[in-house]
Length: 237
Ligand SMILES: [Zn+2]
Image (tube, rainbow, N blue to C red; front, side, top):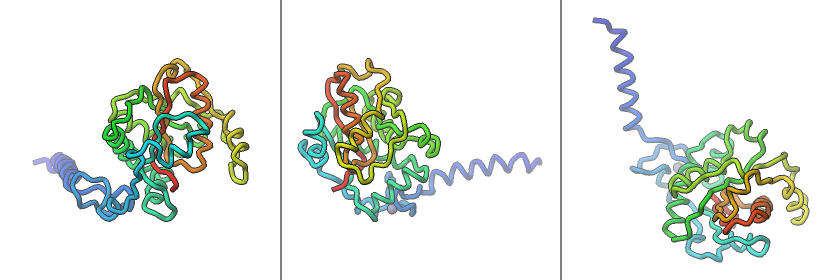
């Protein structure tokens, strides 16, 4: 009997079996998830600060952008607070290669969007990052989030139309006008035909000052979309 030939088969069977029964680590704290069909452990899932944005069109994130730019629907899934489970999760997503965080919330965002019965977008555009940053991180976190959203919603995802030309200078210590000016020249639309007359959904991970989103929206608006909405993974309270 040729044992060496049968062992690899047994090992691969065992590893297949283990991958089915052994739970995946929690997306936020990496501890074992004991709940079926969940990507988060119980204490992280219970502690997540969900916003009420999908219940109110005039919510906090909508108000943050409305008046500065014209937007239809704006929502963040979670509130962002420092030293919270959300910060930990976003850190794992942004800097430690855990794309599954963005995939999970993209899927969840689509469920919430559908439940709220908000109009289905025609095209999803992620807020771009510069090529250099992209090479360093391996992926654009907003694109991972937006791609998962568009898959669940069955709408088209466009990673090529809205691009970032150069690494922007630090925004620290600048006034709002200056911040907007600084980023305005940075974003560019490469394929106007992909957005003209379309309901555009812009996706990003976190809204802080809103200056980046404002600049992207101003750039998109120049090409007459049918409307612009925004989905965020998290927003500061
Ligand atoms: Zn956890």
